[in-house]
Length: 125
Image 1 (tube, rainbow, N blue to C red):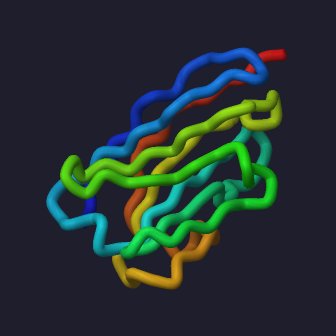
Image 2 (cartoon, helix red, strand yellow):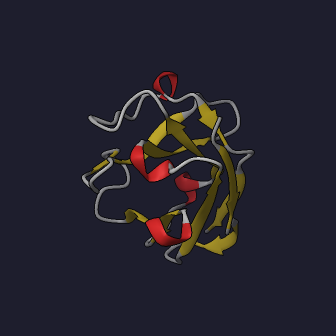
Image 3 (tube, rainbow, N blue to C red):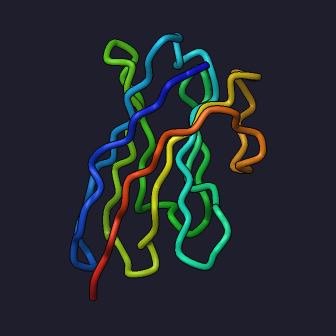
C-alpha cells in the first residue's frame, strides 16, 4: 500500500499561484500512475491531472495551460504547480496512486486505489 501525504495548500487571491506536493513512501511510486484530484463542497471528486510512469501527462480541460503535474523520482514526490488560479479552483486537493498500472493513466477516481488525506486550496476574488 502506497502511503501519500499532501502539503502546500493554502489561501490565495485569484490570479495567484500555489504548488502542491505529495510525498510517497514504501513503494517506488513513480512506477505507477499518479494523479491529482479535487473535490469542492457539494460536488463530486474530479480528476485534475495525471502522470504516467515515463512522464506523459494528462489534464482536465478546466486546468489545461494553468496547472502542471510533475514528479521528482529522487525525492519520491509528486507536484502540482497551479498558476492563474480562479475562484472555481477552490477545493480539497488529493493525490492518488493507481498501483494497478503504469500507463495509460486516467482521470477517473475509481481507477486509483491509494489516496492521501488532502490539502485545502482556497482562492478568493
